[in-house]
Length: 213
Image 1 (cartoon, helix red, strand yellow):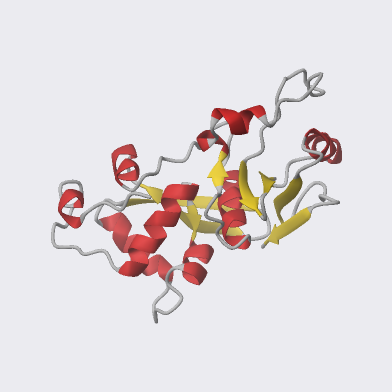
Image 2: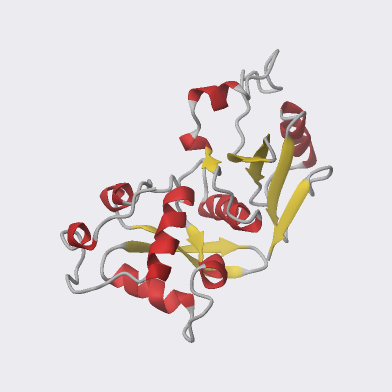
């Protein structure tokens, strides 16, 4: 994992005298892996020893131009802050990328994927779909195609535990029972970890499920 030198960062930030703490660098290392981080996870995993909220420090990193604040809406929870790199260049300096948030991938979905990384104790082998190697993509070729006619069904992420591949899937609360079942069938034979908000259209059965409030 890359960890940009202070001298290099100064070229891109608004405050040349600003210094990153060890907590900041740990946060940025995880951010490079998962693209976006919920303020709740930052509070628990990176800034737990501080007297002030994690959001205060992260807002400061946004002020100097390192991070971007993204307001995410989750039914039942309301609005909350999540953070990602300000630019693609800054993300690259830490070995990461910008999150892809748009019509096909909403912010809540990306945050739930990120939260699963922390809920599963930050596995070092964790990889988002966009970072899959070709051999990892080939694991998810579906013989005969899926019900939608596609020849593959990619999970949102994966990691290795005890020598076995674990597939990771985030549901932002919109999947119906049939969609859940079809994905689970496509990944039969793999251990599955799912994440859902407290308010969801349908619940996942027969898998490890983390419910996020």
